[in-house]
Length: 281
Image 1: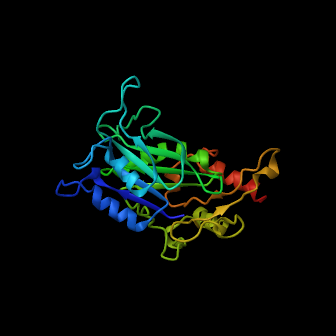
Image 2 (image 1 turned 180 degrees about the vertical axis):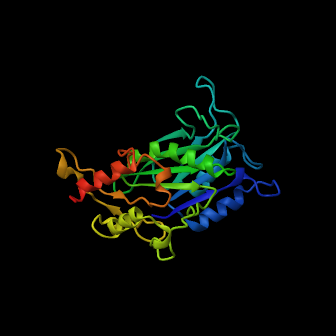
Image 3 (image 1 turned 135 degrees about the vertical axis):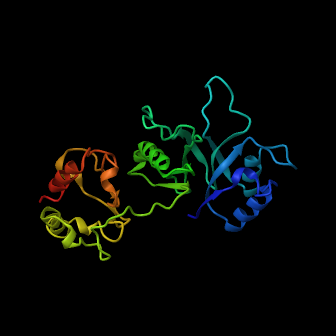
């Protein structure tokens, strides 16, 4: 399966001229199975064809398509003629889809998203040739503020966790490479600098690399391994196995509660107690 994500900048080049032909040529040469598009205006047309540009592109590539608007509008009215959002092209049938708005369910008390462009998360369920399903999420995060992106990602996670045990991919224009936060007590070997740490912190490091077995999954600069692991939690209850979950990096972990793939642990203390049980320490 070949997957591509592409920000098409509203069907226009830098000089304002239509880029539909250029986008078609690029995507046709890549010959991808699934294509996520950002800054899609639909049903915008371009000179030379009365059909919406997205429909023209899908027809040229012989692919199915779905569009997810980022704008909110009254449910009783039609979609604005020039709505922007994300789109998905698929070689295989798209059997279901939904557009989610990346605005907090609760009031944004800090005002982080005030006056920001509305952003969205397009969700689509694809029927693969073998008869299985595959979920694709396409998003485009704020381009002006890292704090806004973090809010949008936290909201997106409320939708993404539903597919934690099913095949899925998250793709799009995230508008930033998130660097590691400063860690003055951490050396280049990813070990604590003893002269800067308390006795309690050093004891914690010994547990991390030793008895607690944290380092088995949490290593490297990000303290993660990008693998899926099956914790076999069904050992402790009667019911359907949860299956494998992906290791989350630990850098800056204190600033992103709740924890685990489904938010079941409200605090880091709860996480420690959870793994004390799982690992039978």
